[in-house]
Length: 433
Image (tube, rainbow, N blue to C red):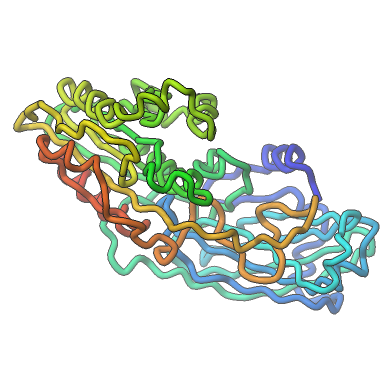
């Protein structure tokens, strides 16, 4: 299989065409893919494909997942030379083709693969519409190939609170596999949401994102990853809000260490993700210095101080956080500050998933990447949980009472649909300020 560095190189070499003409992958030029689609002789491989139900991802894009399941014996008998290349092409109703590929290294096929199926899942953001889906498997050593085609219908949302959000997006955009922390933010996605708002006056908007998960669940399996897999996509969406003649700042706070780990005074041009990553290593570390542990009874007071210092100079403050319950006694005194009549505080409370083991845990050695798994349905790509994956974990929250003196507009968000509705309500309200 291609190394991560080579995958990144291939991505950078792709022909980035305009949204109106599709997206070409130069790897397709190395094979007669068009001829394959015409019928031609094919190899009789034991494999199947299916398109999983389209969902609204936490990135506020509709997500389709194309799953290929190959009989492990087919890969095992080819062990030792070449690659299996998986080609994916979506063609919309206007004839625009969107292409991507991935590969599986046959020199590194594990001995146990013969007794299980190999599953490859390709994720792609799509717009509502009708698509033709073509998938091909190609053995670079034997030159054998096999093709399957199907149809994909993408229905619009039943309720659309943001009807113009997808206006400038391409019909399809493949989600490149990425390692953490990029898998929370998807920085290589090119499409940008259309989220304009026209307030009555220039606004100063402040976004405060709490990176710390609830201390009562901090020791649970994967709690930090689950927290960030909802928080950072939500922060990315908020960073795309375009308030006319206004300025938006962002601060990431770490309550466990009582630090502002990142600050960007102006979000014009989007969140500086490269800078965010340099500050995340300490916040994601499991180790906390002795002084921070000894003084953890002041964590709540730190939150109050950071919110209070931003309320006065701002017209709107958006607090983005999971529900917080502290494991040490705290001074839970509310913010001693009166909000101006023409200002707002919004509290978006993100509920995260309960602990669960990964569903793609079958060890596939060096060939295992985010696209590949063993028999079964892998979890959706990073940051793409379905509403069913995001039930309310717990209702307890000690941050809300401290914000109460500011009369915040609280939005309980358990999934991508609820976040979309909350965002629409906030944008509508901002337009009245």
